[in-house]
Length: 163
Image 1 (cartoon, rainbow, N blue to C red):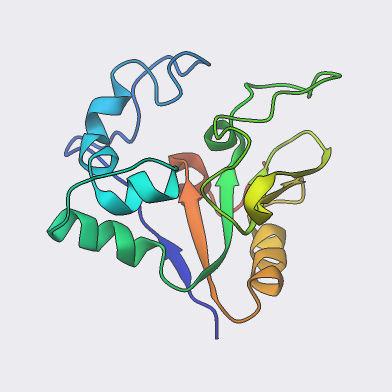
Image 2 (cartoon, rainbow, N blue to C red):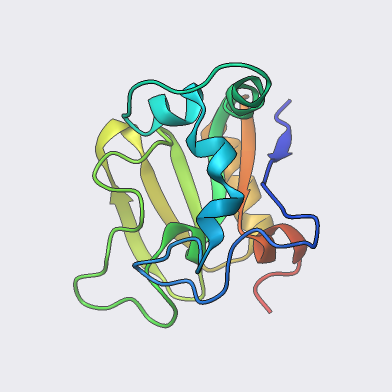
């Protein structure tokens, strides 16, 4: 049976990103400071094609996050690309040509878009039917493995999405 896993870095005052998210500030202004612990660990660095990184308790947490995951659900802002309808040649997100997922990713959005196949077996599926439909499709795609609810905060907190 698949589990739904949610793992997110959050500040003591309830923030997971900084204000004014943009192409130049994907985590919002100052948002990277909150995630410095993750950027420094070996597991994160390996998944993003980088060398080195710290080991220890923080790396253990990061490694556990990726165990037995077969699909991911995320919101449009975590994917990248702004608000509103997709443009004619839409941006392919924050993640580069070889995103760190290497599995099907279901992006919740209000605007339909064809699936986007990337290197490393990552396929982004853009869904407008809401979180429940995304969870059903992700569970099917995970083939018995767990489903990761990747964020952002609106995805995790709004089970009636879209409104």
